[in-house]
Length: 420
Image 1 (cartoon, rainbow, N blue to C red):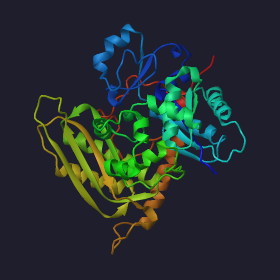
Image 2: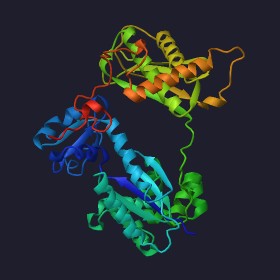
Image 3: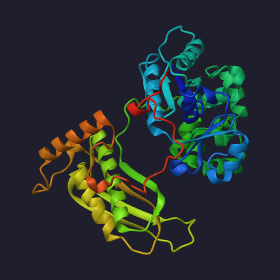
């Protein structure tokens, strides 16, 4: 049975989510900013002529005002919930699905018999807009790499109506000739430059490379890309996400941190979030690295430091992680600097049930498990952060700012939309 993949991608996802609950934005350009309202990270199509991706907000304030561009802080609660709703609908169209990112998913369309798959993809495209309200594009092809490329064509060609089918080899060859090699999924900037020096300019040129030469030039990854462009599937759906190897919680401060107490409060809050992440994935860590640094854009003295703290045994206990984070932060603290960012990073994670134990138990695992279960249950029921250690702070003047965030319409009872 030949494999058929579909990639469905939400158009300008963050901006589309903002438009979802505010009809006044339907014909108005929208951009969404990064943490602390720093840079543009999402733009609707009508905002792209005025704002470049990653452009700092302070540089475009006047442009946004002049062009009547709506500007929002990131609203991750809303975006994550809408993404989950999209994937619920996707699963009604295919039992096999890979959630590739917050706004992209691969669906397996293999084995659908004599069904007209292009018409089926259009039904999916229309159902998503009717049920969820998010515009999408769908690419269909015999490999995941070609499906990504088909999706890109659908997005850039309005006359296709949001769906591009590249199963036909003749149509595929014509499209590959028009796609720059740097736009092929998996070809990074350095690889693209290397290929262009050799005269490989388009995706068609890349697909024509002999397999041994592609492997020598771009490793086994590049060889797979060539096979995929030729219509030979090498990448299957990852329906079960691979186990995380590492986990991190890092944030830029909304105001420079100059006092140890504030730094300890910040890393304590990050430890709480790290513990939540680890327990959500049933993972534990044996060590964590604490880091903080100044901003290269500040005129004062510069400093970047980190400290690895080893735990008595692998754990996902918030209180254990919090103590380790605070110990690490104290050990590398130095007065006289204006710190701009801090974070916690873990590597070599292990499954909680497989975590090695110390010869003499460092703590009561059963009591810890019960306490963390109760903590997570309270926060799941009443909202994240409802219950947390006092060391993580209350007012948090250093915390990330979202001064232009829209309401969390679907995840916060106090911010539900009202109809009068």
